[in-house]
Structures are given as structure tokens and as C-alpha cells.
Image 1 (cartoon, one colour):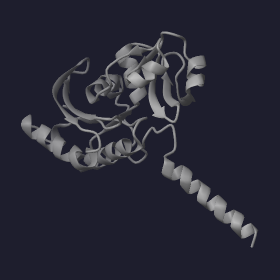
Image 2 (cartoon, helix red, strand yellow):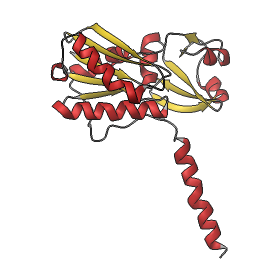
Image 3 (cartoon, rainbow, N blue to C red):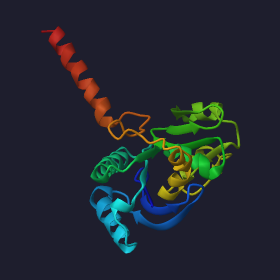
Image 4 (cartoon, one colour):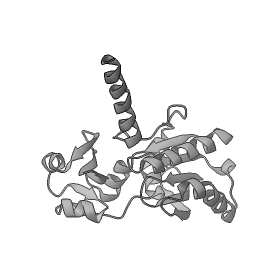
Amino acid sequence: MLLGIDTCGSSGTITLAHHDGACITRAATAELAGKTYAAMLVPRLRALLEENQKSLRDVEAIIVVNGPGSFTGVRIGISAVKGLAELFATPVLAVSRLRVLSHIAVLPYAAFDAGRGEFYVGKYGNEEWERLLSAQELQTSVPAGELAVCEEKSLAAFPEAHLFPAPAAYDAIAVALPRLRARDFDDIALLDGNYLRRSDAELFAKSKPDAAAHKLQNV
């Protein structure tokens, strides 16, 4: 039994799936409404396990989507997975949300709206990278017709992109399967969010010491 968790977007999903090493079969999925992750993630997971007569002891590995996306959503998902994994020393695999969208679309490029006129962008294949790009930078970096998006806003900005459903936890499990077979697990102590951009709190905090230092210099 595999457990997948995705709390990076405007809504989230939890999925239980079986696998035989070569393919996976969805067992059950629960959806999480946006802005309820902190309150509902663990209770919804507990209910999903009980409905399927399973427990965390039956989970072979946890696959978590670790961003990019909502800062709060990413942090809640990562924190919950760390706590769950420690209970029974369950292995964890972290998967990029951009990579999952690229996998769904079978396209080399994927992008999400990051706000402020910027986009989270990933390229996969022979050369791989993930970056935070402006709309202009994205247009000059991605060949027309090779970009996958899952938001109407992104499609409006890039009409030649291909629109797909938003990635979910089950899709992340499919992406993680090769690493699962190779036992290529993440170090839970080093597991962190794939943010690509610092939070507003970090940016604002940086400016405060600079202002204080400037005042001291003028004393």
C-alpha cells in the first residue's frame, strides 16, 4: 500500500494505492478543500484508512508533492509527512508538482502561475531544470506548443500552451514509482519544500535588519 499526499494547490488530495512493482492501482482518494489543510489533513487521512480497513503500518512508502505552490500548503504537507513517517519509520519520496504535470501531459515543459506576473517553470528530459520566470522569460525559454499548464490564467497568458487537469496525489505516485523500485528514498531529516521563491515573510524580514543597520550608522 502506498500513500500519496498533495497539498500544494488551491485544493488537495490524499490517495491510497496498491502496486506490484510495475504498475499502480488506485484504492481510494479523499479531497481536501483549500485553506483546510491544517485542520483536515490528518482527520481525513485517518478516515480514509479506516474506510479501507488499513492503518499506517500497512503503508510501504509515502509520496508527498513538495511544491512549488502555496507556501502554507507545502509546509503543512511536509510537516504532516515528517510526523507520519516517524511513527513507523516509513520511507518517503518527495516529488515536484511541476514534474507531475509534465508527466501527465507527456510534454517537456510545465508551468504554474506564481503570482506577481511570474511563473514556476520546469523542463524535463535530457536537460532538467526548475525556475521562477517572468512571463517574458517564459515566452523566450519555452518552444511553442511544448508547455503544459493547468490554470485558465496561465493559458490566457500563453495561448499556445496545452491545458490539463491539475495534478493530484495519485499522479505523483505514478511519477515516483521508478524511484520506489530503486529504493531511492529521501532523507526525512533533510526533507523540505520545493519553493523556488522565498516567502513574503522572509523577504520582509531581510529588509528590517538592513534598515536597522542604516540607522546605527547614522547615530
